[in-house]
Amino acid sequence: MTRRDASWAILKATTIAGGREFFTAWAKAADSTSPHEHSQAASAPPDPHNWNVYQPKFFSKKDFRNLDTFSAILIPTDDTPGAQEAFVAPFIDFVVDAAAEYAPDMQQHWRDAMTWLRSQNFSAMPPEEQLRFVERISAPERDSSKPRDDGFKTYSLLKDMTVHAFYTSRVGLVDVLEYKGLAYLTEFPACTHPEHHRV
Image 1: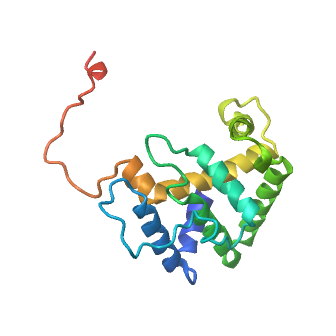
Image 2: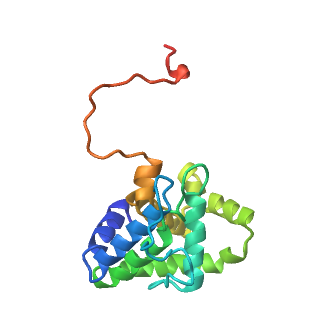
């Protein structure tokens, strides 16, 4: 599955029945986690990251937790929000579930990936080991001499959709990338970093 395929799948998911409602609620839920939000609206939607509230449509609960954990390793929460604050796992679950209508082969790719992840006993690993595991299976991305096996295929699939989901969210686009919208500049201020003033 290429990045282009992922973009197309997300676009198609917005057009299916319930797509608009899901993405509207998803955007509001992610917005309510934003540090720039002035007040928590009383009518904010339920937190889809709460397993008792969000019920996965495509993934089993175990696979959904694995997906959430894996995406949080890829885009962790540090001094900026991460994949969990952007509700990446519910986003992916909805898009993959919606693919039944327009790309059933995409669902098979995700079934294969999650089966492989379960076969590695990912959920039973302590957090430090999970991090080392993701670093190991992503090695071909950094070193072309490493084999691109089922582990790398799984990593690539999860990474591509995680990145799309995160940077489609308000958290990723506004809070992390600091996107200001379509605005023109009245001036072009110089860089204030001293290290960039050396020629």
